[in-house]
Image 1: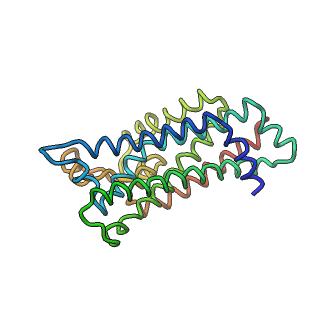
Image 2: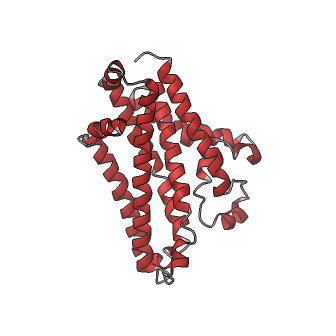
Image 3: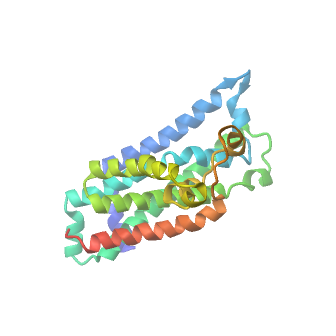
Length: 256
């Protein structure tokens, strides 16, 4: 509780935190609202897309692109502590380096919980408006994509923590984070067979929120071997632990 209170004292008055979080919320609402009003062949896209229970897969697939934004937010929060020496002062005052990493993981869990509950609210709102079947079985039969998204969001943000602790400069850490997730790993995937690269961090994490209609796309572009969301949860949780462990080791063996 002391760690949580300390983190909240630092975050709540921080304008950048609220700006980035507001961008996340506004972009998600804008995308869903805009797409729902588009008409294709005289039919509203909302009537076709926002149907329970498939809505949850579509919603989490769209949301997973914004995990990058949540990761950037975490990088800004962590690197600012190095810039303003607040983390160094906390360690001098008695905070252990393990507690420093733990406190950041609490922030990550809080952000992932917020984003998951936000998706739940969005899904219920658009689903109840557009879905033809609003029975309990239709609403909740595929809602397990939300917990999968939660794990994915936590993993992305713990990776961001690792980059922040290792590089310590917000601009460079953000660039490195984006380059690794969107360039380095895809290049590695391209040069490895699917049965191997499906266990790599980004591909395993992306498997938690698969693209809707992936089977149909595979018939056109070729089948890509991928873990099922349930199976992908196991390596995702292991990667979360690995990222936090590496963050602790980086913090432990480097001067503040």
